[in-house]
Image 1: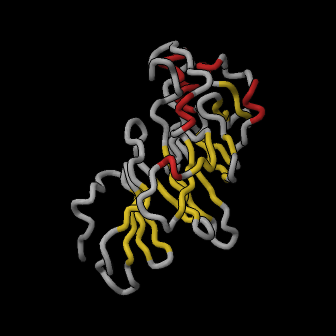
Image 2: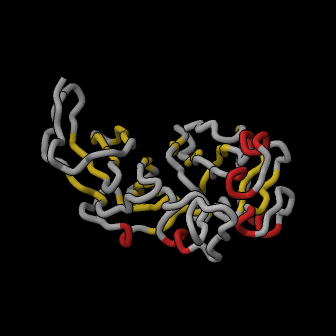
Length: 229
C-alpha cells in the first residue's frame, strides 16, 4: 500500500476511475490525474490538474466519466433542493428561469488532455439533473448513463402526505446525450404514473404536466429517496 496526492486540496469528492494508464480523481473542486503504470503503486509523475475551481456549495461532490476521444464528463450538482427563491422554505416559489442551470445541475464536458481548465472552458453536455453523482459509460456502445438524486420536502414545504413524500419523486435512471434536458427544477418523475409532472414550486399539484412534456423521460424510475447511485 502506498499513499500519494497529499497537499493537493483533494478533500471530499467521490469520483475515481482508471483510463488509458491514468488514475483520475474528482474532488469537490477539481479533477486531477496521475500516470500510473500497470503493476506500480506510485505515480510515475506528479499529478496534473485538468479542471479546477469547480463550485463547492450545495451538492458539492463531483463524479466523472471518460467518453471517446478527448472527452471528459464531470457531474456538477445543484446548489439548492429545488431552485426556490428561499431554499428549502415552505411555499417559497421557484426561480423562473432557474439561473442555477447556467452553471449547475448537469453534466459538463471538458478536454481530457488539457491541464488547468476552469468551468468556463467546458460546455454543458446535459442539464436538468439535480445531483447526478452516478455516471458511467456502457462498454461496447460508449453510451453515457446517469442516475441523479431527486428533490426533497414535498410534504414539509408543499403539503403532500407523508405517504406521497416517502414515494416521490422517483429516483431516475437515464441515458444522456448532448443537449438533453431532464427537467429539474421544473419537473419531477412520478414512477407510479410513469410521467413527469410539474414541481409545486412551478405551479404543480401532483397531476399537472405542462412544460414537463418536453423534458426527457428516464429509462426507469425507482421509488423516492432510494439513492440508487
